[in-house]
Amino acid sequence: MIHLQQLKESLEEYNVLICFSGQFSQAIVEQLCDSIKGQMSEGEGTKYNPVKVISIFVEQAQNIINYNFKNSSHKYYDQLLESSIVTIGKTADGFFVTSGNIIDNQDLATLVNKIDFINSIGSSGLKQYYKDVMKRDGKGENGRSAGLGLIQMARKAKSPLEYQNYSINEELTYFQINVNS
Image (spheres, rainbow, N blue to C red):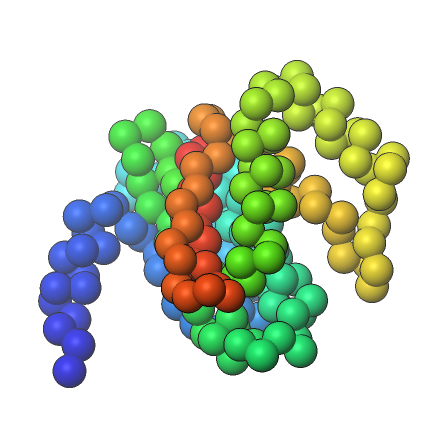
């Protein structure tokens, strides 16, 4: 049986206010947005506007939802769906939003290269890059954005996007991204 007190202590150690693990849906994202507003409007968080944190959370959640949708015929689809987690917590000078999910190893290099490029161009470069991507790609198939989420997160972040990945097997990697706001 899981030891919930240990889990709670770990969450407190990392200053996690909200944690969701499991299958993401639009309804869950909306409920978590309401919870974020509630958490950030109480106590010390009242001096911080939750809009930026909610925006970053929504971008991360949408990236996971879109990735899973795109991979609905993947042989490990059930694992992809169930691997998602997001945490939102406090830092010394703001908040963090960290999410993670399983991705196919074939997608890893492209994702890492995008994040590294976004981190390398600075805030003025991000604004122009966003405009360039919008002009070039606009909206992808089914109205899904064409990779603008990472750019949007970087534009709202206080520091470069952070990421880690852990190999699961020859085909899958667990990928996580952290954004400080």
